[in-house]
Length: 291
Length: 251
Ligand SMILES: Nc1ncnc2c1ncn2[C@@H]1O[C@H](COP(=O)(O)OP(=O)(O)O)[C@@H](O)[C@H]1O
Image (tube, rainbow over all chains, first blue to last red; front, side):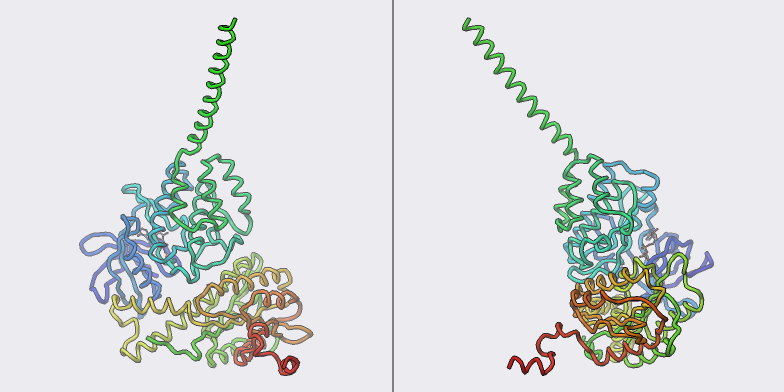
């Protein structure tokens, strides 16, 4: 939309004044700019001509401020530009990179991946509990804050009321594209998106429902020999058998279960051997004693 | 706030094509006529690697949506189902926005743009809720010309997907299908009258075959007529709609 780096924007209702510094990205409903206010603060500004969508998104951003996971939002306002009315809101500028970038650069350890999904599950549970789902969960909407390494969720455009229909989605995370159900906005739909995100993180690649098969992907996951519970959480969610963030969370956050299982089995085996040895010795002892 | 749109339902025709029309009335004019009677006409152009749509095609597809007050999208075949769904819902939303905006203007004297931002929340909330609960009637006019031969199966499946998804809405949704060219040398045929039943839709759509030219305009005209006469597939309506002869047998 804007060509000149030094274009200014002035809010019609609030009279706030900003200088546009650069374009950060664009998406479904508009464009995101890095802007600077008169007191030299930087913000991210979302600009759109779609009054309904932008008002809605602003509203949800305000509603779900949770432990700093979503960007802080400031004002919603309008401005005119070459005879067209635009709507904008300002939010905290997150200096960092999206999960897509992090993955490409192979920056995350297994533990980091799991705890990242755990955190996302928590924030999404909050959204679910309020009666909504976040249907367009994807790499591009998760950012890592360079300042403190924290996970941030951006883009509330896909928030949809539970019980209605999903309107924004990306095929890789959409259960219908994989033949696993419809686009009803229900919690099982939400868990499917979470499971696909985790599956893709763990396998280190993106998928395409037109050419990939879920069974093949799950088989690849199985080969990774992660704790059985993590595998089950993903498999069950994909099959539509989990519709509760808490269940998913508990199953995937159960760290080191493989070793635990392994050890327990080992322990049982050792115990049996010891008992057998003791018995054998005792037996031998009695045999000798009898002599 | 109460909203009254004739019968409180959205009427939409979606024209799906992979090329320019070449038989019958001008589709852009047909779309304009439909729009005048309160029907929104949107268009979807199917593109592929070899066919990104030449200029003439694009002009026509966009012209149809523009004259029909609807939306225009280009999509690859595999995304046809999703595109139709989004289009249907967006159209519902847009129509309601327009209605609400008009009402607002007549009650408060300003449209939403001139309302202070904080006061917009309630209205936006309302639009969103209403968009999902208003009744929807959608006619798909499907290009079945020769060039669609290898695309037809996927296109059929996307019709089933569309209905399955519309079924998740709170409001009632039914779809009808018109093919152009039609059966038995007709320019176009109603393959399936309005239904909300996937099995009925499947049984009707299954047999569609491809071949022939592209009479897009006549298909839009036929869709208008179907929309106004509101013919339903029998099973949907139950006994009420059975012809008299049958009723006589049972009385
Ligand atoms: N608060 C923010 N801080 C920094 N960059 C952002 C912020 N919000 C969005 N972006 C950038 O803009 C891009 C598009 O934003 P997004 O909200 O996803 O747009 P849309 O909703 O239109 O798809 C993102 O991928 C990200 O790079």
